[in-house]
Length: 371
Ligand SMILES: Cc1ncc(COP(=O)(O)O)c(C=O)c1O
Image 1 (spheres, rainbow, N blue to C red):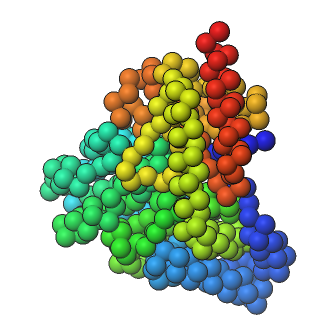
Image 2: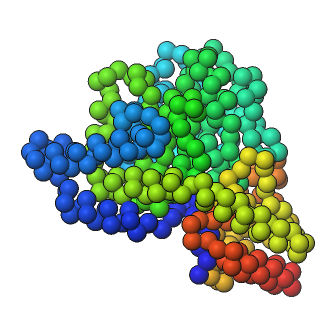
């Protein structure tokens, strides 16, 4: 089997799994309990908060744990909006945010009269600072731009956009779920007010996320609402372990991924297959978006599946939704053609041999499809 869907989710790291088991066995208390068992669990939680704060280059009192990347995005954005109500009801974002954001914004527009402006990307899927500057209004309360695109891997210039928004006093949220553990996610250098991450993209357990929220964003008495559930300390301990391992390995993994991508794309192009690969100057190499000239993405995905290769037709959380990937339509690819898109996403177990085999299978699928 060849698993090429790491941007959807990753298998759990063995060390993180061991940490989960030890924490669940030895530190099972409720962190809100005032007895010693609760206090011991609280100590582990505090340690994890400090660790994650260090990984994001910020202090523990700016870190909030959640039950997913989805919850992290929504809680962070909701908090920024609530804190800036007096500014107005205009929000700026991209047309390809993850559904945890886009659907939330649709609801704000439909039910609470917010006005949403969508920034146009260039041909590589990049958002330009100039476009953000041209779209800002006096009633803009928040700007929301993902750090790394989950469908073609484009890295957005968050640092530049954040630095400028800071000078204007406009709040800025970035979805860092696909960036965290892969590239530098120093929230101070990114100049964001909030930043969402999640565990299951970095070899941690599913159902755990976190967000950075700059201090002084809301009144002190509102902060404890952000983490009011019984906290899943074992998952958080496993998450911070996995995240720390991923970040330690990120420089060498990035190099390895670059080499694998170059090999894969060159081999594909050599064979002159009827497809194109989405390439952009600022891109995470492990996400490889492909658009077939004619073959439908879901046909390709199922054919790969029959051959033991597991990849996707879009961002994982939109499975069952037959709509084309939104990043691809935002790149001006007609809706029908955009359905010919598939995504391969490589991970720490991917080898050159896996990719050689995948290319061979791809060629066979295309040959079979033609007949
Ligand atoms: C960019 C991005 N943001 C947010 C999420 C949601 O994370 P979670 O699955 O933890 O809710 C995903 C998941 O695919 C994602 O790719």
